[in-house]
Image (cartoon, rainbow, N blue to C red; front, side, top):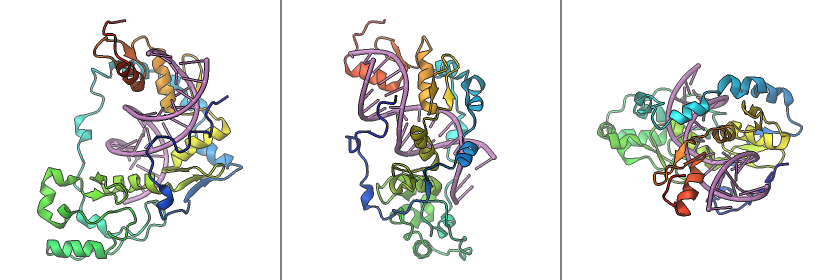
Length: 263
DNA sequence: CTGGGGACGGGGCCC
DNA sequence: TGGGCCCCGTCCCCA
């Protein structure tokens, strides 16, 4: 029986924005009760598809190799491109990705930075609910050559900066929480987060461990569980060389005072 | 104190 | 450009 279903210490110590102050209260994505089973089944692959015997058997070994391996190409870590200022001309919709207005007709060539800034605001940059004031560096085209200026989009709720507008829009969803559970009313930033939450109501656990068949509703939890089957865990204390299955366990180990000797 | 499960957040990549 | 998905991570709770 789940221990903390729906009874999360609500206003616990975790810092959360005061969502009640946000203007966007209209859910754009909800699961109603009873659930649309056909939709859910279409969205969630059957367990045999998600069973780690098919897709995750190497996870443990991958994670063992992780400290030495370079799993991601460095090129993939680099920003693909500097956002183009002309992309800012059609920001009339909420961050939902739905209900977006047709793109504005292409703006005429901008002849100066001052006209650029005023044109952007006139075209809707300032009207986008989550976007802060037009960043200064975007007011000058020369700033685009400065690598430091690549984080150009600001969230008006928390002032975080993003290089890509899409990333900012995605971030803003964490403030507006447009996906609402039809059962308990809890709101989420993304549909798949809501989908995972719905599993706490349905009890569905599509992710199973290939070693012990323990089932999980969440792939991350399965990944953490797979660490428990490994003799050498992913996270290692630099002082005593002891390994842990989770970063949090390593942190607790270090905070409680590492004895120092290897175990 | 430690190990582990449950629930969830968020950035980045791919299509 | 947006949505889906993956991965990494955090926090809470319990045994």
